[in-house]
Length: 448
Image (cartoon, rainbow, N blue to C red):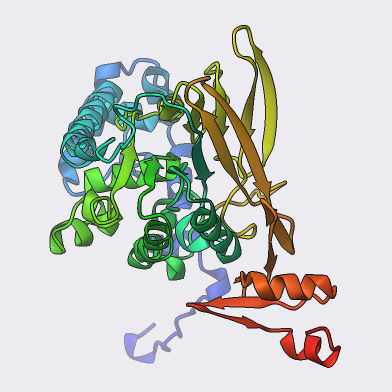
């Protein structure tokens, strides 16, 4: 047939559905699928040695110098099947380590060990410079010689800075004002340090400065004004230990305070301003959780061979003991061969019962303690002050909670008047004036 008379033929275009799978660009296939297909195409090689596998992996790394070789990447680009190389190395991580593409397990452990001790060196230096100078600096009873007369103490723990229950705080401060104890013991966890908590933190609640200022303005200053001559002992709790560690390592949340503002632990806590006697006997370089717990149990103070205050634990000191930490009030009695029965009191918390401190709040209750010590007989009596929801009685003084503002109605005259007529008004404490929220109601009832 003549080429001129040849009819042109139309090319048939295959529909997309008829196109073979091979025509689909490989980039459209997910990497894990490509890797799996590549692995299925390989066969087990019984003749491949350990060195052959290592050389193959090194060659791939040389060809892709900026690539981190993963298991899937080797499946796509490597020579040997997974069964071939895994019999020598087990995991891809070990495969890379044996090939020298990453640190070995021992090398990583060594690095971590070195880093740990480098951090501990910083902690030891911080403790020596920032903590030790303030330990027992303001101990008024260091050279005390026993003499007739009772020593009075007020002990409270677990305020957790801005999580403090304002009603409980007001009762404690007013009790110190009325009782004028010789020693006030802040028995650990005065701070919360939410910023450094291991619990799930709401970033909106992170405000380190507000927490520091709360303790200074609402706890330290009022206590010192209420009891200008008392010794205030601040026993380091597990939350303060957390603070010390972050200060020692100058983490992000602490760097601004320590470097930019040029202040240290004493200035941050106001130890010198309020003459607060720091008690820190535990080893702050403790690293593991078990070590930390053991060291915290050593952080105690013995008063007149009669009473021990410590934050955690139920250690048998052979004398009466007041501890905190659990937020659950408790009392147990042991019989000492020489001293007879000795009591161990666990005070409750001074923080709100619905605070963000933790998830578990079962059986939490607010409480603090008063202790009376005979230094000659070396015996003590502990009075446990436990709060009910609406009120608390401290040595005959009744304090009633304002359910709205969680403040104290501490005008004793109004309290006596209202109690006498069985009218429950609520008194707010505002500077030097007391206002009764229920006064109008009481007046209408001709109660006052």
